[in-house]
Image (cartoon, rainbow, N blue to C red):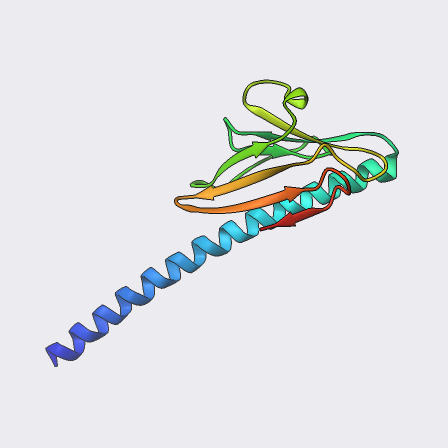
Amino acid sequence: MLVVILLVGIAAAAVSVSVTQGLKSARINAASGEIAAALRATRAQAIVQGKQQYFDVDIRNDTYSDAKRKDVRLPAGLKLSITSALEDRPNDYTGRIRFFPDGSSTGGHIILTSGSRQWRINVSWLTGQVAVR
């Protein structure tokens, strides 16, 4: 009887670790999808309004803001970094990707990090296409 209880306890511990890792991965996937959607929406606003729109990433506070200028904070444990045109950076801790009325952009990529795992969101300079890798 004790052996069965011990085996059930070990199985429950293994399942809880697996579920925790699965939830963390789902949260990161959702965050990267939300960033990609915000980038696409910013591009769409540039096309519809016929004027440049900005997507800013604040690496100090792990926030980003799109064309609506609404700051979105990442869930705890996630970090942001950005590679973008140096001339477009408003300050030392904010990166910016600009979208133009023809759909193109200044390009760059945003990296979302959790521990040792990374998700990269690429923005093509020529087409403004957004892709999550």
